[in-house]
Image (cartoon, rainbow, N blue to C red):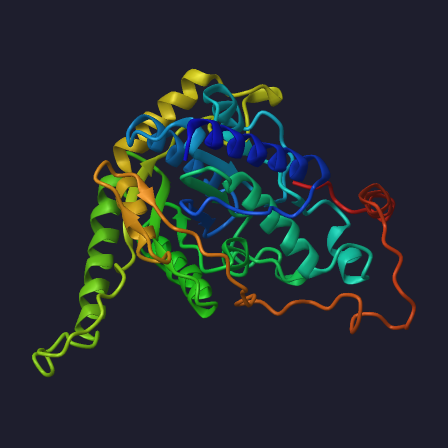
Length: 373
């Protein structure tokens, strides 16, 4: 292919992308080398978005990715806060960032959905999937940020167990973010990992966040105990895998995917949540200090390596970058009953009137609904 032909193809491709964006059209094609990682939390406010920030910063500063190869998106959210640290960082370094995606759980949304006054489950999922496809164009790694805890959105069929499948059109590996402690941290991990497992969504392991450096639950003590638990668990699982005994050892068995493990334990870092005091942005210096702290406590290269095992035809390159051919597939929505909100939940046969967000919120406010997150 000549340089002129390549330039023409690039120009046409960019023109198509601009038209898709301007008219909100379905994405025609996705470059087949994009690894998508879904970051979920075992509870609200555990630090999913700051973990996404740490991942992007480490990919950029430590693992050699360029800003143009990375993207971040939060397809569904309960918060529309401005000046989030991840948004400030991405804008500063040139990473494509969508901090507020197409699905916002604003006040009144749930009841309006149940009454058939919003888009259907399939429509909501497709809008979010298209948003993820859009940021994935020409990228190497896309970080997809979850919302709340894994079952948030179940009333409208859009949970953290259904979206990793639908957004990737084949299972997207999940990284769980947990909190401090030993027993409570492990219990919360297992509860949420089993929730994903019931939907056949793979969980790579966990990052445990916001740990104290001192006291009974000091980071080093939690790291030692929780890591020991995961090691024991891995040994037990290996003992029960086919081919683990000498019987039938001459038969070839497929290499199993890596067992879930803790990828890091991150100290608490002040003022790295939704934004600074009085709604002001967190200073960029604080953001970079957090990224430096994160990358010194988390094995991000290990996360990428594990994620490739769950993606079709994935491979790691010698410099630690991940190349994952992406195959568009039809997919079932796993782990979630899709709510037919226009049918069985209505008491009459009239077609429900679709309302705008403004109408829904005003009705909710009039009825006494609490403000959105």
